[in-house]
Amino acid sequence: MLVCPQCQFENPTANKFCQECGTSLTEKACPSCGTIVPLSAQQCQNCGTFTGTVWWAVISGAIDLPLFPYIDAQQRYQLLEASSDDLPIEAKVLDLQPLQVSPLAALIHSTLGSSTQTEPRETDTSPDWDADALELVQIPVQVQLYLSLRSQIHQTIPSVHDAWKQGNQEILLLEDRSSLMPLVQYLKARPSVPMLQILHWFYEMAEIWDALKPLQCHQSLLELQNLRLDEDHTLCLQRLYESKSTLSLQDLGAIWQALLAQLSQTQSAALHLLLADLQNGQITLTDELRSRLETIARDFQASLTQTETMPDSHGCADLLTDEAEDWDATEVVTLPPDLEDEDTDDMPTIVLPMQLFSLDDAGRTDIGRQRDHNEDSFCINTQVTKHQLSSGKTVQARGLYVLCDGMGGHASGEVASQLAVDTLKSYFQAYWEGNSNAGLPPKTVIQEAVLLANKAIFDVNQQNARSGSGRMGTTLVMVLLYDTEIAVAHVGDSRLYRYTRKRGLEQITIDHEVGQREIQRGVEPEIAYGRPDAYQLTQALGPRDEYFVSPDIQFLELNEDALLVLASDGLTDNDLLKTHQQSHLDPLISSQSSLEQGASQLIELGNQYNGHDNITVIVIRAKVRPNLDQLR
Image 1 (tube, rainbow, N blue to C red):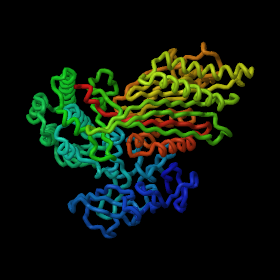
Image 2 (cartoon, rainbow, N blue to C red):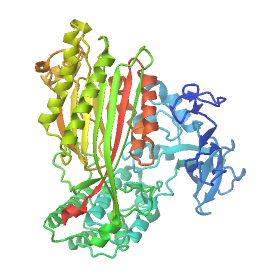
Image 3 (tube, one colour):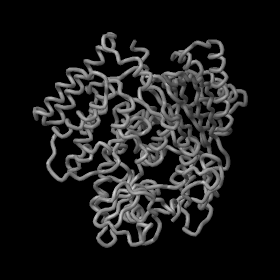
Image 4 (tube, rainbow, N blue to C red):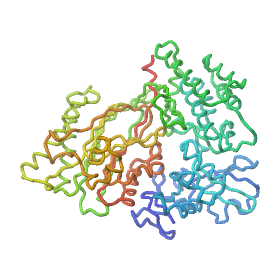
């Protein structure tokens, strides 16, 4: 089958256009000049830009390639360049049928697909299936290593596209990370890197070491060229290396020494002592290693706040200067939680003050597959100012994001939702115009705005003498953003989710419905949602006056790159976003991903698995960087 790159619909192999959305299944536009090029082409015939789909091949068992330049009997994968002639061979290969589901993905889906909602995708074998389920499938042991680890440390491990045996050869096709900068090269290019960032990377390596231990893949962390940084400075591995001998934390310490040798700045005495203890074998447990790193980071943070020990200002400027426009590096210095301990309330964290680096957004709405009109409304209203200096780029922004779902079964739900959107948009435009230097509105102002929106709808209901189910209404979820500060207000069951690489998907709002009300009163969830009225709304905008409307308002701070998703229940029902977070949300964190396309794919996802209601989504991508000027 051919998976449409636009809507993810599964098409017969013979199709030239997607039968769901009409997108071409044989051609695409060059990202540089817009010229239409074949999907199988390596580069644009007009401007020479590379346009092909490339995988990283790991070939073991034998060097001969009988069908050279192809590595498979079907002649789908064409060899481009090899990194070496030694076994295993590592090479880039061009996919001549990039929309065709790989045989490996099809095999897994045919075995497990009937019991899951996850469809086979051309970019990842299975981001959502757990290791226990995969034991049911007869797949190569090497593939199981990758899939098992991706379930624990998703971003660190490359995705598996395909794998097979031919003769004495074993061939594995991975996500191509060869273009990502090696960590050692990054340190050479920037000899003065903030100590907290270095400690963060070391902490990440300690956690990855734990994850690799059961699978005997510690060698993966001991190959300098295998340690890569993605566009957000997240540490990741190019591939897995199986350990040929027993390795210890002494070996990890040696790699840390090699990395620190690239820096010209003086390292802290505490870090030198830690490395000495590693080399002497005095630290044998990763728990102790992480604890030592936390202590060093905490002490260093304290020295920064006292302005006693500051990174060199020229080094900080270099750090914030982009070497390439398309490498949108973000530095997150919060020590991540222990992978084996879900209770992170007591985990010490080191968080630098952050500044907004980029802000992107997109919104989409769709009638759905069972409704004859769309009762949803939304608006995006932002003001973004970019500052480009020799020391780097910063962004100042304020934004209003409103999503309303006209109440199903009520007359003129689309009128209610649009009236709420218009009222809130006008209110906050006037607020910010009258307070040009104002930051995020306080809770009282936000509450007043929501109650005004309720009054606007309520007054229309009263004027038209509507009663009972004839009274129109709407849900509301609203986000106000000012630089790295966020305010959230909601009424009803439209939701806000936050997705980050550290925490995954989090539901920020709690639905205003009978089932949730009963749970908050101490009723067991199964009993609460066993009621026939469990999904009935307990409040909405419009049907009743202000005394029956109490919006939930909360404030959040951006201290790492985040994806915010506002969605109506047409998309959130049946835990759809939770089920498909790795395939439909995780890629959108990357600055190279199109939010417009991502929002469209979320709409298609909702139609494919829900479709019973209107579907609306707003996606916000906010990226941040340390604001080192605040520490001066």
